[in-house]
Image (cartoon, rainbow, N blue to C red; front, side, top):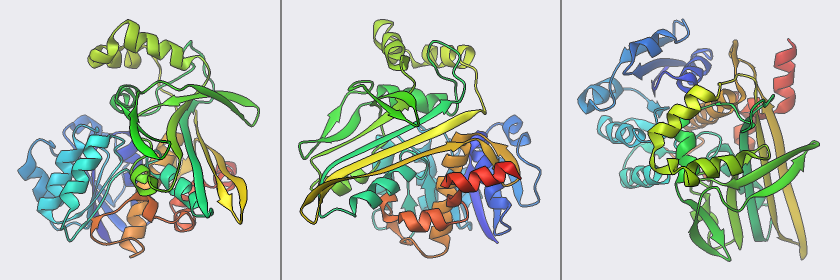
Length: 367
């Protein structure tokens, strides 16, 4: 059994731990500074908890030393400290961050390292980059890459048409921080919450708009090859207008603590969610201008014997699949590893990655 450390005992960290433990191939230590959170972990012989504050670098390094890898499910603003500790402890490093600055820091730490540093292993960035890169490779010449993802309530019942499904801090960060995009062949920065569009999928109308971090490293990988590339978050219509009023008219973009308090006390969380993935790539192949599209919806379901929300399933499956591929030698074993280095076929054929197959998840729900 490989020894793994998971940082953060929240909903995602707990899902990662039980998915790994259930395989019988991983022994998982989950760390958190809050004993109350650790007490909520599944009672499993391959899962143990340890109270560790990320700010205590020595304690963190001591826990990591001698392990195969550390998986960070910590808040985006603390993830960089985990990467520093991984370097000092000489363990492989994986994270879920969507934060651009953190990823750049991880890339710097990875230079010259004999261990693999693999950031952005979740849904978006993460799986979305793997899908987009797979579609892009089917063309002789690329024109546009459009990536759309949303974690939405199945049954919206408020003016925002939204329920909390994951990290509030991460959500706010995506709504506020600048976004990367490729416009007319150049990598540029565009403002969050802008460039709203509407589209329909399976008879349901959605809106999408710029949010930060979703492109991951794919923007740099494809910069010289594509004319237009962007990432937008999917919501039900009406959401963007209200959020923009909160951020700009009420200036809550400069009072994140107030905005977080509002969200967490006015928007109920839900386990009844759906993750919508919609990627469209256009370009030329054999002299013809063509379009390739990947569209998928992943619902809440039972994974590793535990009922999980769709965002838990997709996020945890992303990082556990990449860990499995790293452990089996299907990914580079050192330096900075990009999500687009993972092939879509390897991902979907993996025991964790199969949850992205709608039919497989439906069958599990029916059992």
